[in-house]
Image (tube, rainbow, N blue to C red):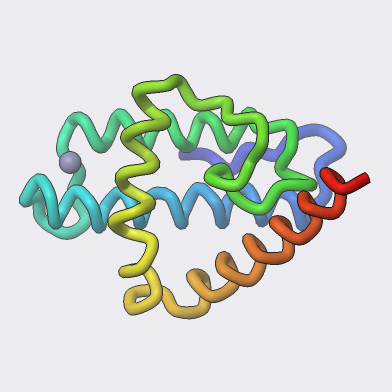
Length: 125
Ligand SMILES: [Zn+2]
């Protein structure tokens, strides 16, 4: 997992990209520990693959500037089976992130709401 900085990308967007990757990684780790019985800090093969895939999607996402989080993105670049998996992980790990990482989770909730409002505005036009 390198620090991929796209050409011309602002430090703010790069930081957001890194934050998203870290957050998704933590959610997958929570899920894997609870569902697959792996030890904390470890991932089973399936989850490691999902984590690598999610990272890769974040690295390549051209909408990092505008969107807040992949689950919110209107482009949905995930392959269908990966999308199913990541949604399951989010449903499970999302509420639990409040306890593990309250600041990051609250920021995510706030940013998600802000984006929903913005998308509704755009749709109304
Ligand atoms: Zn797993």
